[in-house]
Length: 390
Image (cartoon, rainbow, N blue to C red; front, side, top):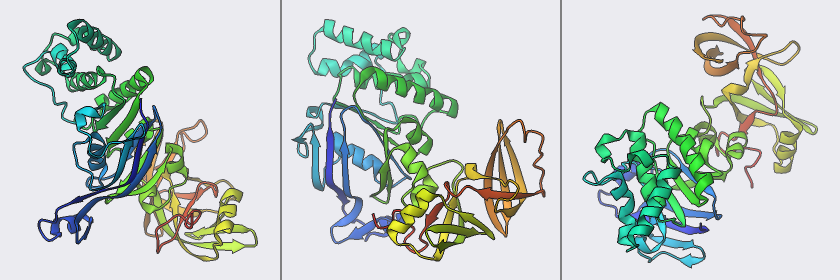
């Protein structure tokens, strides 16, 4: 168990090709080189489960490797339990890492793979056996202890890799996209296993993924990254309900949030959103946030999650959409609708009232979104207008 503090961490790589490749990826390049991670600040509490999430090249794995000591920190300070770790060797940081590729020794049995780091620490055979059996029991791999890795499935190999990491009882467990090599069914199963593991071993977790579903399922807090910069840090609920900018809003949530051009209208202490002809009043909470920011009438980008775009009731403001595609997804139906030439996605959950409604192609629906669930973005800065000046 450990507290981890990252203060103004930066990682700069040599600029080997004039910055062409980096600029193509969108990374910033200056006289020092390619800025892979910029001004990264984060305080991680003891036993917290933190997830770094973002697209490829955003710097999440690089940051994890700097914590592990596998990458040198260009600038800034890393503390583990209030001790400066910048120049401490990886083996002396008392942390363990689980890789995407499992990294198991093929010629060793599961037992030998898990025992290897303990042998390096020169523990007695009795201690090693006790710790290996304890970890194997936690991960339900006791029956595989005498098998070689080639005889295991992908999910079993990943459990062995995790077992090898936790036998040392490390202060922190770092996991770099550990489930990306597994199929969808195994990924779901392993997510559940990691949640159970977290409850059993009570250590600090830092987990890297590009999959926002994994991030939302596992993390106490999530760090969303883009092009080496932190975009937002928050709980899954905070990121889903109050995304700080268009990138976070579009990255978090499935299907992706709908973004439409609209107008924000202020009438006294109230605010309305005009989108595709529908004038929707925002909630009192959102109005108060906008009043504090001093927001006046202006053009906006309206963010509406597909789960919140619903069939309008009698008397509600609405816009009309024509069904282009209807996707049956069990208890939910994903509707792709043409609204004034825009593609808007609505997720309709089956209820007793609408189960026989019918969503055939070409059908027109009156749609709306509750004013408490709409997000409002500045088209110029791409920031959420409720929090733009915070």
